[in-house]
Amino acid sequence: MAEKLCAVKGMNDIFAPESAHWEWLEAKVRDLMMRYAYRNVRTPIVEPTGLFVRGLGEVTDIVEKEMYSFEDRLNGEQLTLRPEATAGVVRAVIEHNQLYDGPKRLYYMGPMFRHERPQRGRYRQFHQVGAEALGFAGPDVDAELIVMAADLWAELGLSDVTLEINSLGQPAERLAHRQALIAYLEQHADQLDEDAKRRLYSNPLRILDTKNPAMQALVEAAPKLMDYLGPESLAHFEGLRRLLDAQGIAYRINPRLVRGMDYYNLTVFEFVTTSLGAQGTVCAGGRYDGLIAQIGGKPAPAVGWALGVERILELLKAQGLLPQPPVPDCYAIVPQTEGQERVMQTLRALRRAGLSVQMHAGGPDGQGSMKSQFKKADASGARYALIFGESELAAGQVAVKPLRADAQGGLTEQSLLPLDGAEAWAARLR
Ligand code: ATP
Ligand code: MG
Image (tube, rainbow, N blue to C red; front, side, top):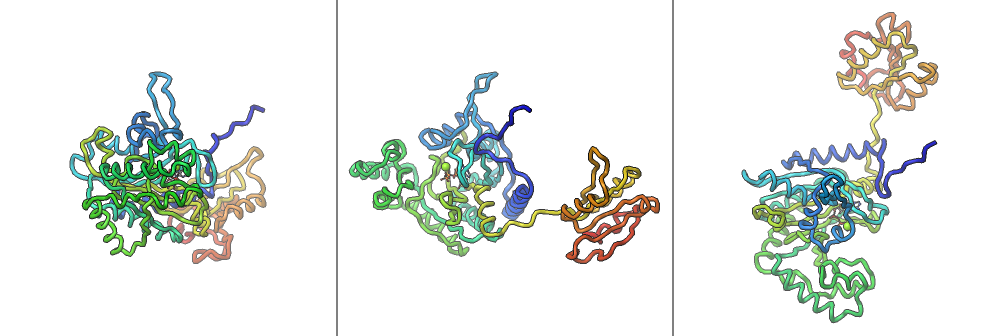
C-alpha cells in the first residue's frame, strides 16, 4: 500500500456530526447579520504579503512569525495565506471603490492561517466570522457591533462570556504614553522577561498584554494609556459607554487591553470566557481609523471584530448547547433493483416537497437483505421507512412504516400510500 498521507499539523478535517454544528452556527450568524443589515463580502484567501506587512505592522506577532508566506513559482510574487481578513477586506473596498456612495457594513466567514503552536483552541488553519463597518466615525457603530456580538451569544444561549473594553486613543496620544511606558520599563529592566526585552523598543504596548505571572505586578503599575487620552478620545470612549449602558451591556474596562495588530485606535474590545482554559478570547476587535489610508485608500474611519469559530463551538459544546445533528425524515428500503426508476421518481417528488430522504443504494453484492436494510434504516435515525417491495410497486404503492415512537403527529401505523402524487402525502411525514 502507498504511504498514508495526513493533513498538515494544526489543520483539521471536519465530518458529521461536527460539520452540522458548523452549518448551524453559520446559519445563526447569517441570520443575525441580515437583521443588522451587514452584507456578505468574499475576498481571496491568498493576498500579496505586502498587504499584511503594511496593514498589520512589521513588528506584530503575526507578521514576525505566524504567516504562511511563499513565492509564486511562476512569477516570483510574494504571497501569504491570510492570517486575518480585515486587511483583505480593506484592500478590496479600496480597490473596488466601495465607499464612493457612502459607508458600508460588511461581514465574512472563512479560514485563516497562522503558524502557531497547535493546542486546544489554537490551530494553524482556523475560522473566523468577522464584521466590519467602514466609513463610520462615531461610537454609535462601535456600540452597534458590540451589541450585535452580545446578541449572538444570547441567541446561542451562551453564558460566561464577558466584555472588556479599552481605548487606545490616537497615535499622538499613544506616542506620549509609549515614551512614559518605555521610561518606566527601563527603570525596571531587571524584571523584564526575554519577550518583553525584545519588545521594549519595538512594541512596548504589547508588553502590557503579557501572560507571564512574574510580570503581572510590573505591568499593573505601568503608566496607563487612558491617562494620556485627550478630550476627543475620552468623549468617544464615554459615548460608547453611554450607548452600551443604555442597552444593558455589561463590560469591564481593562486598561491593559491592547490588540495584536498595529492598526487599532480608540475603541478596542474582547469577549472572554473562563470556560476554555488559556484560549479564552472568543471575539475581539476595535477601531482602525488609520488602516484604509495606510493601505492606500482615501482616509476613512472603520471598526470591526472577528470571532473564533472553533472557540465558539467549543464553548457551545462545553455548555451543552449544540443541537442534535439532523436525521433524514425517511429511509427508502429498496429490496430489488427492478422498478428503481419508479422508486427514484417518488423519492425525488418527496424531496421536492421538502422531505429529507435517504435512499438505500446497493453494494457490490446487490441490495442486501431486508433485515440489513432495516438495520440501516434504524441507524440512520429516520422516523419512517419507505418500503418499495415488489408487491407494493406492482400495486403502484409504497409501504410507509413508522420507526420511532416519537413520530410526533404524522403516521402512527404502517400504511400503503400511492407512488403517484407523493407530494400530496409528503407533509404527513414531516
Ligand atoms: P490570541 O491572543 O488568542 O492569539 P489574537 O489576538 O491573535 O488571539 P485575533 O487576531 O484578534 O486573535 O483573532 C480574533 C479571534 O480569532 C480570537 O479572539 C480567537 O477567538 C480567534 N483566533 C485567533 N487565532 C486563533 C488560532 N490560532 N486558532 C483558533 N482561533 C484563533
Ligand atoms: Mg494570536
